[in-house]
Amino acid sequence: MEIKVLAPAKINLTLDVTDKRPDGYHNILSIMQSVDLYDTITVTDNDSGQITVSCNYEGVPCDEKNICYKAAEKFFIATRNEGQGVHIDIDKVIPTQAGLAGGSTDGAAVLMGLNKMFDAFLKPDELHEIAEKIGADVPFCLVGGTKYATGIGTKLQKMPNFLASHIVICKPDNVSVSTAEAYKKVDALNPHPPYTDEMIKSLFSRDMFRITSTLFNDFELALKLEEVNDIKRIMYKRKALGASMSGSGSAVFAVYNSERKVTEIKEMGSHDMFIAEILSIDADEKYIDDKGAFDITKCDLITYANGKYFTLGKQVGKFGYSVQKKKRK
Image (cartoon, rainbow, N blue to C red; front, side, top):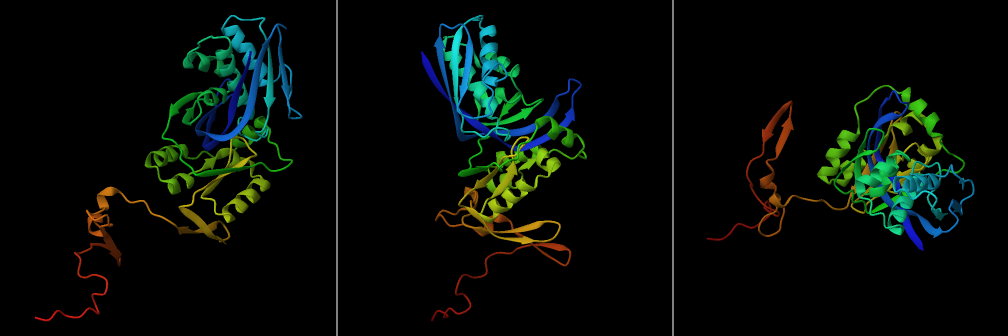
């Protein structure tokens, strides 16, 4: 029997590393998001009594070190099917050592494929328990979507869907990041309020401009990779709404949306100023009149002058008011 499973990549809309635990792991706050970039996992059963792995991507281990091998091993132990023979083939498209959970998503796909192949009927919480023993990102990769991850990344809470029109991912050549070294540099950062709290509010607001303005990654802040900054600059010049490094790097993702586009980037010394063209505006229905027009009188507008605020009065005229002819009696 042969089963194919698509394994989607993951990006981090935010990633705050809060503290180091006594067991050596780190607690995080993160908004994780699955994206339409896939590896394909093919699981085939056989009578060999062994777990074997193959991969089209040079450099990926195809022995017991491979996360797919570990996933199969943990699955068979949990379902008391030890000694079962399977071959796992990985058609890899997701870049390795990129912060895109390429290994973790493959491991999650193996769990899903084996659960179906052997009619184990494991429930989501049972699969989650196995996934936790394989890797911190594997539980998220089992469910995907938009999730708030806490602890070491295994405690997940559903969030409003991140509805981006297009996401572009770029991994710089010859730049791979060791997760262990990345965490050492993050540990040296000064403490700061978590950006993830603001991202949660932004997701509930469903304001794409607010969401893309809140993208953040502690690893990007700590590693200061020149290649990452170069890619982000190019992405913003190509009208990205927001861009950030994913995971521990070094892949960078950018969000694009036709509603708002950056038209100019001005270097200001300590920072860059982005000038954007607004292509469309969303308005709450409560501000629309019975003719479908925006009614500004419902907005309770105020104005500011010389340190004081003033309410605005009622309508005094309309377009062409100053030149319109007086009506004859």
